[in-house]
Image (cartoon, rainbow, N blue to C red; front, side, top):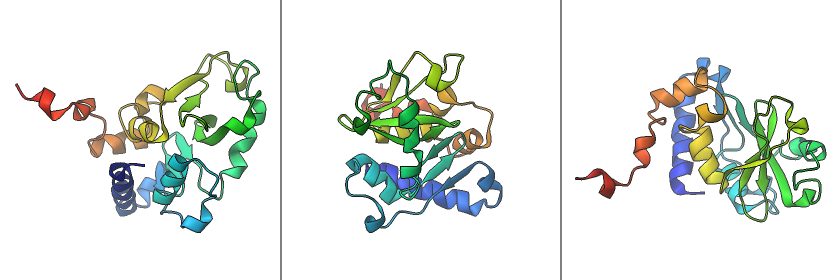
Length: 181
């Protein structure tokens, strides 16, 4: 995990705490996990995330805490046969949910995958797509950034919080050298 992401999570956690109890309705960023509470066999990117925020509920996203991670792995059993998951369940890890639908981490590559909306329940769908090349990118763009509305909605408390924090402006990603004439 980048130190920027860890710092951003800490800042957002503090801002949410300052607005409690109102913020509890749409988000909660867990305190950093103790190293001994995070299983050593987890992919490094997930371990790093848990050590920065042990669980994250942000609008429609919920990334599991170290203690709840084992409890969400049942989603692997329901993955459609066309996806690569049933052929190699040990190669995948459910890291959380988006509106009660699983978000997967491919252990070999670190990429984040999901079953995009197809007009039916996720486990009956016919599409499985990569969302981000790694967990950091996923959290930065989809959970804490402008990609949130691409996957969820721009009409909820978390989206409004992201907007107040100035995290929805994609132009912030432009290289400073490109911005100068």
